[in-house]
Length: 218
Image (tube, rainbow, N blue to C red; front, side):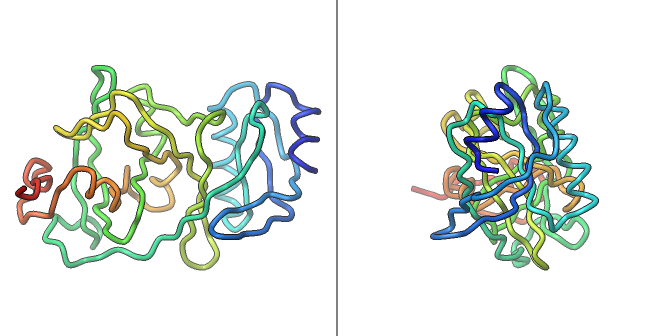
């Protein structure tokens, strides 16, 4: 089915769909034909449905959208691998840190955050951030498909979170991606190159976040 047909048959619904036919051009994924798997009343049920089916069939191309969207264009991004040269605390053999996120006067400590110079974007697990009131916006969020090895990929949604703070760094207009990364990767979040550039930080040898996020001298 085309997206226009899906929206006409399912007005005002959250939809779990599978791409039957899709094409890629310049890192944009066009969904040409889709099958509706299930429709839902609320976004959390739709996301739970996605996670359950994705765990059973990780190579199937699944998405969650709200039928109020005018289009379902998907941006493609690729993990280029983890760089291991930085002197940061190792977690399961990978460079990781713990850090505090704050939003609307609510804070959460994420214990397992990957510090990855091989990832362009910053991603957080949506279930972890739900504790401080941050949820995926299936209506306005920008859908992205993150590819990894063996043809497996994850769907994320890029959005701006007003009032978000990571450690002492305020990120009022910084785009983050929300998706399911705890289960497939074992991390609460991945700090990518975009955050490192925005925060003007560099890796330090100490384990605390305050020492990891040291600004470059002007």
